[in-house]
Figure 1: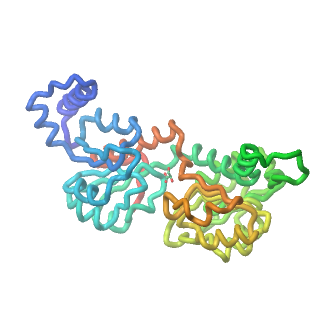
Figure 2: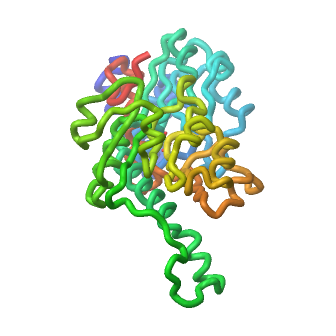
Length: 359
Ligand SMILES: O=C(O)[C@H](O)CO
């Protein structure tokens, strides 16, 4: 450990004192704090993580003190200079330019996200920088939101509330606002991981007939838990009544949901994406939705984010678009914040992180 226990306890007292607003740091204490490793936090993250950093007595940190506006690139490049660690969120591209600006002191990047397509892993690896991320703690929240989005889309809830509010609700009609139900359906999962399994577990009680999935290779252990069958991408497209995209965005999965996939799907099928917008070719999706090639889509993620309000997808009644909120529950965001902070501190101490990306 790089800091003695006595010093650590003293710094914890210092941090607690300043946290409580009691202030009164002696100049020696201030000097001690200024020798601690420097951390830049690119967003005002939930208090759980900030508290861990503050009370650790292990680091000094500066943060971009806003949750509403991401740190401007110029400011980021300036602030990272000479830092030992960086705690970021998914809106910051941590690439060669940022890493060069940070310089050789940077040892740890900790992202408060499960997705890491905003991190240039190759550049991080080249520099021997360790990378933490926040899987698992958000699985339940993301699965829950995926189910909510799926039902909202398949049962046309946004259209229905709009009709009720705006006078479109006439007499009870036999086929008005009919949608598609999960009972007796086939649900396909593109990219079977923890989140895909959690979605299937939640959908099973709706009497789904069959779960199928595709991935780079079969994942028998995960599949067994939900009794899912491994199929080819073509079969996934052809058989799925509901297709949920759960894969990470990589060069291999970029726009893998395109004309080719949509053209093989049933006209009655529902497409749901809560992973990354880059997995979908949005022009092809627009075409598939507007031509009736597929029934509807529910998207929590798009390219770009935010999706401009003038985007053609917003004109479609059969497309439900959410502003990337899958993990947005208070408890999950708090847990993500705490995990990101703990990963960072462990990384700086050269100890195994709780969740680390093996580069
Ligand atoms: O990658 C992630 O963590 C999600 O997309 C946002 O919570």
